[in-house]
Image 1 (cartoon, rainbow, N blue to C red):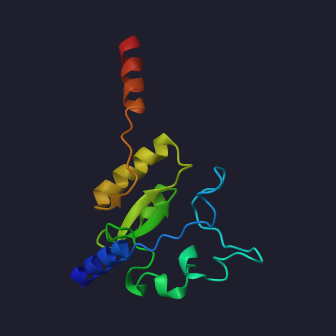
Image 2: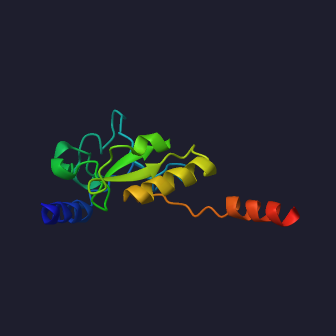
Image 3: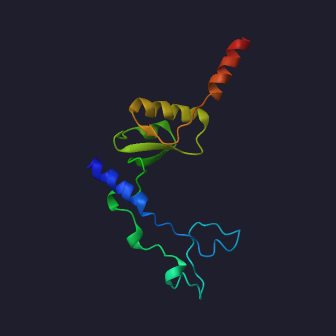
Length: 139
């Protein structure tokens, strides 16, 4: 089953249906990120061949890997160390929330490491160690 999942993830990456916003190359302030064309005379909305495809159900990823991280794990967003309880290291990978501070982040990372979980946005935190060394030298 793992080989099949790996194959599907590679196929999803190779599929490469990248939808661009209509007119993003004409105006500098328009980003390439997809926005649905809504204009009455818009050629892309009317699905003219050369004007770019619209996202449709056929472009979706296979159900077995939908929402899965490219590493092959299901992603779980974690904000506290208690949320790591009951997560299977073979299935889940942890992403620490952006609003989590360094102290709690360090605690979550240590617990995840001891549980065998993979942390997708791991951060080396040397600030806390340097601060404790300075305090001990000053005493």
